[in-house]
Image (cartoon, rainbow, N blue to C red; front, side, top):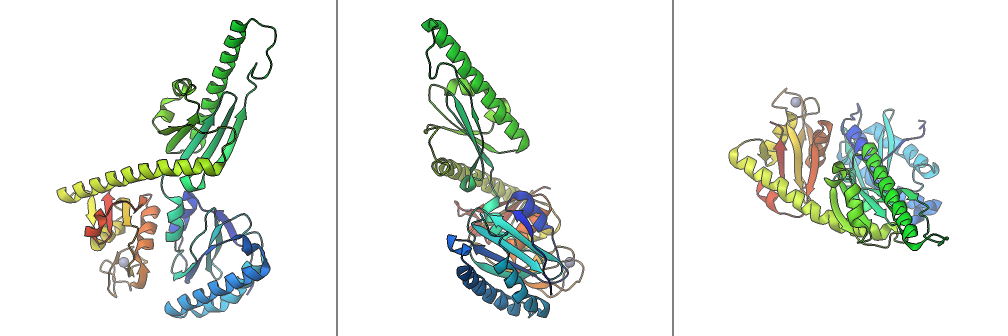
Amino acid sequence: MELSAPQLSHAEPKTLARLAETTAEGPVLSLFMELGPAFATPQARQSELNSLMTLAQREIEQDGAKKELSEALPVLKDHLQNDEDWWKDARGAAVYFSPDEIFEVVRCLEPLETKAEVSAWPHIEPLSEVVTGDLWCVMMISRTIARYLMGFPRRLREVESIEDDVRGQHSQGGWSQARFERSVEKDVQDHIKKSTEELRELLGKTRFDCLVVVTLPEMWPDVERELHSDLKDRLAGVLELDIEHSSVDEVRSEVEQLAEVRDNEKERGLLDALQEGLGRGERAAGGVTQVFAALAENRVATFLVDESFERDGVACTSCGWAGQQGKECPVDSKPLRQGVDLKDWGMRRTLASSGDVRVVKFHPDLQSQEGIGAILRY
Ligand SMILES: [Zn+2]
């Protein structure tokens, strides 16, 4: 068996949405791993991959010993060992593999917990933990420079910067002091205008959800005045940090704190909407049976799942029905797939029908609903 290079992709929402719709004829092996600095040495890589393949082999046997997948493992391992393109500059990776059908590596900026899964489709649950939620943009603006960071809070990175030559920041010239100061102020105002326009362009390119402005207290009123209403609506915080010298890590940690407060509030809002819907018996589902029935009908707008939810069930790969147990699908009498990870299935169905997934972390409400709930479209 020959293996050509894997399709390489990045952990981002569109990758997740595509994987959620991917199916295969044969079984799909999903591998997750952390790529520490040692991964660059062939010996360490070998030992990592060996233990991963042992895990994979165990999963394949549990799934009913699919011979072709078992036989392909050594080839897959060799390829991952010797091809260097897929792991360079990544901290984590998900490998999806089905002989002759799927070979894709999703590269992540954060480490993933080591895990192997065998299913009839790519297992997406570990990836969805790193790429769901709000997308954040940070503009750091001083009198002469503007820096822009973008991403999910834990994976913010600098995407752009502007440096404007504000007159008189360095030399005095021969002007009268008043004229000179007016001229400098005009330059600063121009810089603010240009920087906020750039921000609006970034919004056009990437629809971020939340904005943080880092600036000097005396500059904020002028910056605020220039922010377009589209940007003001997204403003989640104004911070004071050293604009020229703060590292991305420092900014990231501040933004993570803001994001946590916001996530907590958002989660509260969604859970309140769920409670209210359940109370009225409208546009809401709670518990495994109800939620999976709604998912099968593509009615889920927001799939809410408790962080601790872990349960295997059964699913019909033909019509999408899923439940706790059974041999035959109640909708179309097809045989049901056993041992389906219901959290993964729920995320998959939701993303494939353009819904939102939210892993509930701060509030215990879902405990009374077997750990899952859904806000419905109708
Ligand atoms: Zn069915």
